[in-house]
Length: 497
Image 1 (cartoon, rainbow, N blue to C red):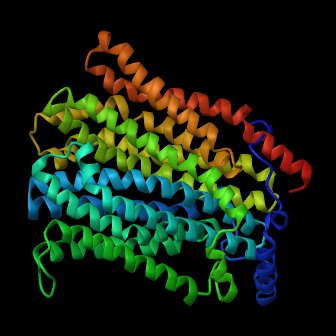
Image 2 (image 1 turned 60 degrees about the vertical axis):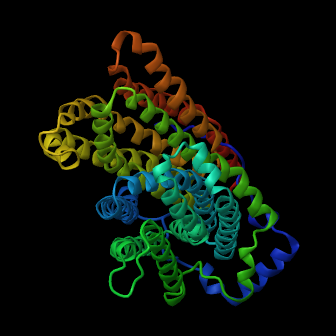
Image 3 (image 1 turned 30 degrees about the vertical axis):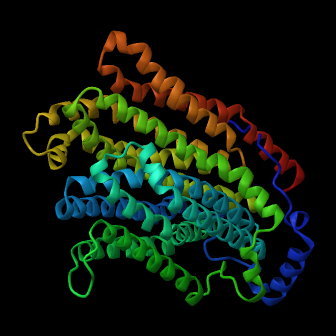
């Protein structure tokens, strides 16, 4: 790729952005721990072979994603087997709401990753702690507000969603407990993403594995009342997830302090949990657009489900099984993209702008290699794998195989686009990816469906996937080449930042 680098905004000098009180606290913190800012730091992603470092940094996030997905599937099985169809519908409705809300928290968590990574790469550990603490404090406060409002308006939300009456009471019980646990889950998510900004992907992975295993074990016990546990039904499933999240977050916090990780907050540094004006401004400006990307994707997915449901039960079942496989196909791109954002952010902070093209190229190569391998494996062995979800001999299996052949390869293009977006995000360019995603999901994917339906009939909904992915990659490449992030990079290089 050619050397042309524009950007969104200049990368602020830390000292200029501080409040006077915050600056005083920063000086005290520097005096307390100067050794942290000298020499090599744990989790330094600015040195060494780029591809090897990126892959090693991506693997823990990938493992955590796999465990979370498998855990979600197993818990869905527990609910279905122990409580029946209405409980499955209840959890499905509640989880849609929670996923939309956590999409917003994810955006602020990613903003924390980027800000921590910039400071950490520049070896300004105190500033990294400030961003880390500010991100955690903001996300917990946001989650508390959402938890209170959500608990009060949960019945109205379920009515708006037209949740089936027979599942509404169970969905309400599940949703209210999940709302109450949201601050703990938001804290765990933000801490994990902040740690990744400091190059530590292992601690969040271990916490995630513990959380998933506990949730799997506690679910049947709290649903059925096994051993010393009360019989709570659907509420037991929600309480299981909430309890596991609290314990997992506790393990992560304990690890930070027991291992004396660089981002630990002590003494007056605990005041960093109240974000400064500069940190709050960054979180709001960058977090909302990144969270909106998740919301846009989820909403577009719901529209696609509605279009498929019009084709009847067989199509809905085939599509549902395909979505299960696509969850795994997309994991490598998501893990590598998250790792790229942390790695690029650190190199920005270290003023290693000459490494950015190489990091992006390595991310694209790794994404295409792993996603391509998974895609080939699914297309080769799709019949037995789909049979696990649909039942061998199900009339939905042939249609599901047809869907796989049309759609699955398009995730190669989506993965490449995610890699490009990861670099743009790290430079503060968050609106361009949001616009590209909205155009590709709605104008291109859904637009293709409505334009082609008269000619292709029901096939149009499947071909809409590659149409949207091709459009997204094309716009992503244009934004990579000519977008505003390059101006930010050029400005940073010119200013010596």
